[in-house]
Image 1 (tube, rainbow, N blue to C red):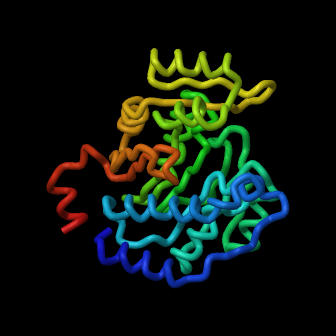
Image 2 (image 1 turned 60 degrees about the vertical axis):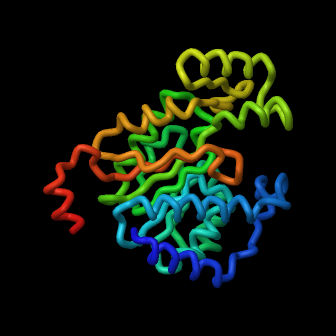
Length: 259
């Protein structure tokens, strides 16, 4: 997408009202009122940056997964007022709230993302703080599944716990118990991706090296790695962006599609 079109989207967003609707059970708002809206806007900034690297001409369908209660969704609606928005989460209350307040389609998620019928393909898929809570196997499988649901040249952005997460855990607040964290760090040092579940839960905390996520992304057939940005989302999570643009497409075919 050319810079002028991305600038037009950004200008429209800046002049649009951002919904102030907050669900009573929005945990993200209760634990972060001071930066709630900043975090949502930062996600949009990540998306707009990736669009400038992509071959997309327009954005007509967007998926927010997991949507929670709309920390990011409200900004997506302001930026893409005519787009079909889909909100997916394992929490039905969050899905229903987003669908009702941000004019879109709700999708109930499942413990295994590939079991979810997403109902079509999307130009943009935003995956904020999902892979930060699951192991490497699920990250790889789910990332591949979601990339299959991109339109041609569509983009997926996903956040990860990178190097800064270690500082957050040690200097600011513990994300998991010290015994689990020690195992996470050792595993990450060995293979580039560490994970341990919360007690009696099927999800927990993951910690990864940028190189491991880049390698994982570059192994997805029919796609192209656009970028990896350390602390790209709200100065906290690393963000990878992947396009459904074949990295092995020959020059002649590429020129025909994009003169």
